[in-house]
Length: 173
Image (cartoon, rainbow, N blue to C red):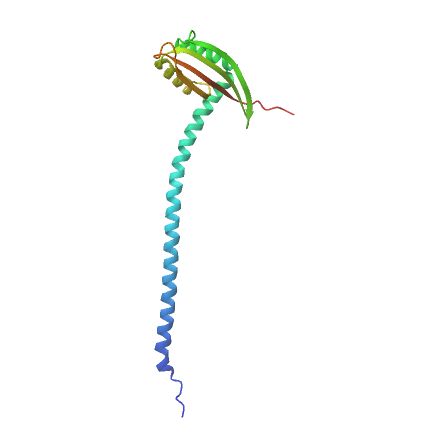
C-alpha cells in the first residue's frame, strides 16, 4: 500500500521552507533599503555642497547687482575712465583713449574703450587693474597687453580694452 500523506511529518518541513522564504525576502528588503539610504546620504551630501555653492553665487550676484545699479547711473565709459585715471594720477600717461565697440548680449549692453598708456610703472599698472576690478560700476577688462618701454625698461607700455556693462533698457513695443 502506498504511504499515506502524513501531515504531521511534512508540516515542519513546510513551515521551515516558508520561514526560509520569509527570511530571504526580509534580507532582500533590508539590503534594498540600505542601498536607498546610502544613495540618499550621497544625495544629501551633494545637496549640501550645492547649497554652499549657491550661497557663494548669491553673494556674488548681489555684489554684481549693486555694481550694475551703479553702472546704470554712469553715462559713458570715457568720462568714467578719465575720472579713474585722474584719481590715480595717470592722466599724463594716457596716450590715447578712444571709444570701442558697443555690443548687446542677453539683456546687457557692453560699451568698451581702447586705451593706450605709455611709460607708467608697475605700481600704477597694478593699482589701475585693481581699481578697474573693484570699481563701483561694473567694469571688465577685455584685453590687456603689457610691454616694457624701449627707451626705459623700468617703465611699461599698456594697451587695454575696458568695458562698462549696463543692463539694456527694455523697449516697449
